[in-house]
Amino acid sequence: MTEEKLYSGLDRKIFSKLWQYGKPYGGKILIIFVLILAIGGIQIALPLITKNVVDNYIERSYLSLILNDRTIEITDRFKAYRVRSDNIIFIPSNLLSKDEYLELQKDLLILPEKYLMIRDEEGLDKLKQYQLNIVKTDKGSFIPYSEMQKISPDNIKTLRYDDLKMIKSFALLYVGLLLVSFIFNYLQVVMMAVVSERVMYDLRSNLVRQLMSLSLNFFNKNPIGRLVTRLTNDVDALREMFTDVFVYSAKDLIMIIGILIVIFRLSSHLSLIIFIVIPIIVMMLYFFQRYAREAYGKVRIALAKVNSFLSEAISGALLIQTFNQESRSEDDFNKTGTNYYHANMHQLLIFAIFRPLIDVLSYFTLGTIIYFGGKGVLGGEISLGVLIAFISYIHMFFGPIFDFSERYNILQSAMASSERIFLLFEEDDKIHSTKSAKYPTGIEGRVEFREVSFEYKEGEKVIDKVSFVVEPNESVAFVG
Image 1 (cartoon, rainbow, N blue to C red):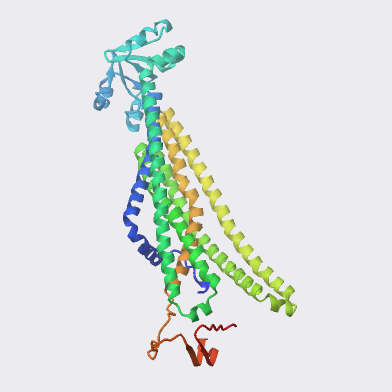
Image 2 (tube, rainbow, N blue to C red):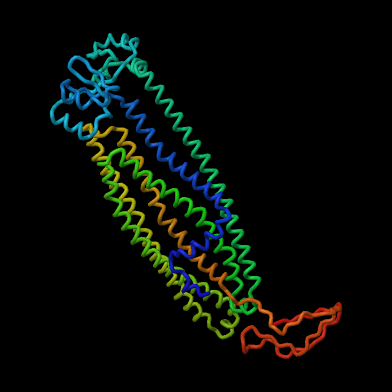
């Protein structure tokens, strides 16, 4: 099992072998992924709740259109929401499409003033002292937003009592969804921990069973420390991959797909900015994983050489001191250590470039969204709630990409560990009984070795034609 030649990147065969250990827990894994879907859905829904509150209750307003055949035709599909006065049509600001808005704006059919609709007559009585230009209709009264600053805060609260009530309801819904998300997340983490520990237990048990079936020759060729590492560190690396990579990668993928669908439905024009950025992100991820894999391979080779040198130097310390080779040994270690240092620095450089580049790209994307989204809000093409939701989704979209470098490192380590573990499973140096072997009969407690020879490697005898007798209640030990 040579460390330098083991790691070859991601391998479907290894994933297939790992899945064999996960199959018995398929039901629990399915529940985990259902919980992940639910958590992802809740997180995607939260900005939509914010958008709804901002557009329909905080910034609730009506557009005022000049009443004519064209505006009647365009607003016909909004009959349930349309309110007509003598020469003006009022409709909620968020109903017109971008093309309809631009068409009406071009034809000067949209008036610059926006209005707040009030249905509470008692509230209107309190506004008489302010001498407002209120437009009254059979469905309610409309107050220009430009005159709202004349009204005292207490009276505004009275006028907008229904809005405040709905805002409170949505705030409770928001908190409730956060609590549900917390519970689902807790269940998912606990279940994933149980499944991963069970999988690792099965894997470790099979490893021990495999080791117990191997011949003494195998143990003579492989240091015990390396085998212990397979059972401990390498299995732990796989556990970390199960808990930190598989689950969160699935969650991130669901989140990214969900976000792209939602933002496209919110505003196809603003979402184009994200879709333009995606190829750049894919290209950056491609080059990162390519160079990171190469750098990781060099680090592993350098580390294997350091470990090998230390093992030989410590076990042979007596010989090194006897022949006065301390300086030479130190020089050799410095060369090996320097190579390991440079390999690590090369890997760190790749990570140091990737993360800031993603940072810059995320802020550039956010700035572009704010600029064009702000223009859209001022021009009436999109609502303020849509812009706020977009900003939230940008942060959510880039979150998984920021974590990619760390998880990719864990994945590489786990795949290297998997290769070493499954290579151990493929060892065929088993204990074989010869055809001439005979089961002893009539055992009385007396053991006799008569011209016994034994070798680990063919041609290198450890004992040669040894004969002795062990009487009952006697003990004999071979030392050396």
